[in-house]
Amino acid sequence: MQRLKGIGVSPGVVAGRAVLLIQRAHVLRYQIAPARLDHELRRLDESRGRSREQLVDIQTRLAQRRPELSQLFDAQLLMLDDPMLLPRAAAIVREQRVNAEWAVQQVFHEFSAVFEEVADPYLRERKGDVADLVGRLRMNLRQGVSTPRDLLRELDESSVLIADELTPSIAAQVDWTKVRGFATDAGSRTYHTAILARSLDVPAVVGLHNASELVQAGQLVVIDGTASEVILDPTPEELARAAHHADDHRPAATVDAERRRPAATADGVPIRLDANIEFPDDLAAARYAGAEGIGLYRSEFLVTSGVEDIRDEDRQYEIYRGMIEGMAPGSVTVRTFDVDEEQMASRLSQQHPLAAGWEPDEARASRQGLRGLRLSLTRPDLFRIQLRALLRAARHGSLRIMFPFVSSVEQIREARAMVVAATADLVRRGEQVPRVPVGVMIEIPAAAYTADLLAREVDFFTIGTNDLIQYCLAVDRADERVSRLYEPLHPAILRMILMVRRAASRQRIPVSLCGEMASDPALLTLLVGLGLTEFSMTPGAIPVAKQVLAELRSDELRALARQILKLATVDDIERVLLAALGRLTLIKGVI
Ligand code: PEP
Ligand code: MG
Image (tube, rainbow, N blue to C red):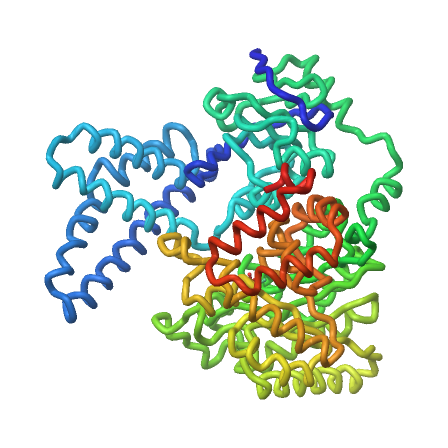
């Protein structure tokens, strides 16, 4: 047993297996169960395969236009076969039983150390090639598991998080109903994430300096936020003490009601905070975080998680109904499938009648191609199943249907005609169908620019800034090599959001915003200044958002937004925003 002393910032005692998050390298380290070792090695291998294909493709294209540059990638292709790179990473996965991302990062550190020693400047430059290649391997490892939250989803419910530092944006992505507590090397009593921990009742100890180096992934750990300590390899008595503390003795209904108190600014303007969820069992996290409702259910996870539910109307109905009832009296906004051809095709068994004639051209499947509503409209039989299931579920509470990736009025009319057809199917069966609000995601610049026209066709808008930013600024959000250019504070983005908000107000339809932008407290305040009053965000971000909003007056935020809209650069906008918010006591700790 070993005790580490830190600063307890959120009381309570919990025990669990350690999961390590090393933010500096953006890598999560966790232990792999023996049964998952093969799976992890396969991921590594698949990432190598995809990386090779991409590099060869780049080379082929360069060979036609700039042959002199195409050789630059020879070094990276050779490195892919270097025994010191991927075989070494595989050995680390096997020996340390850790995830592939972590192993690749370790190998990069080993390589870097060697390059530092080399005197030859030409060879030293090869470090850049290794970094580029490692970035590509990590990007390809993310296929299917894209955020730390996705990785954390794979953990069981007895984990505790040990991190070098934990920013609010990462903390907001953690499912705190699964992760029991956290400890960080960095931090003080006013540490931003400490505020979050207290709001969520998650025991936390910060300021431990080197806990992330001392603790091993999978090691049993007690986090005692009351006594400001972390205990490694605790005794059975310590574990029993943690188990005893874990029970919250207040009645569950009281705790739930406290958390679900609606948000408002200091001058009393109500702000609606809903949750974005991917899986029906995220509902607990949404309620726990105090969401009023579900503002975005990404229903495509029925497709991408491998569940055979996409053509099973009854099964989908049960899932939607469960969510609506679980969130009552709050409303649930279900977004129809937002997948591309490849994701859809991989879920349809080719023998099934609905799959007949479905031969996706893999080379053409892309996030800018046949995706979202566009794809649903080409598969009316599948689309109608989803719509019927939704309309049936609507009888059990408050439901809204939302279409993703819309770029024209014609698409909306076609989709609404499908809703009418699905309603007619149900009426023929003798079922009653309530009126369900139908809305669209505004996430393609064309939709933002024609928001006034689209607003006449729908009951609500939801601004999807994740896509809006990437398509407006021409930056692939999944490609970390250009992620620097992915900038929510770009004047173009702020103007577009304002344009959409105004179009919705003129038509008197509700508009909310559900991109990641809303999870950042500083950006959220600017969005309120732009006149938005409804948001949907990762559940973990809701408690801090509530606290920050309660400190701010809406008239001051409007004045701040007016000032910011006149500025020309992201740097200026950021400076003015942070200076204005820095005066506030709470947000000082958050940003
Ligand atoms: C968005 O685009 O902002 C959004 C919320 O949708 P997704 O991230 O699922 O594309
Ligand atoms: Mg989107």
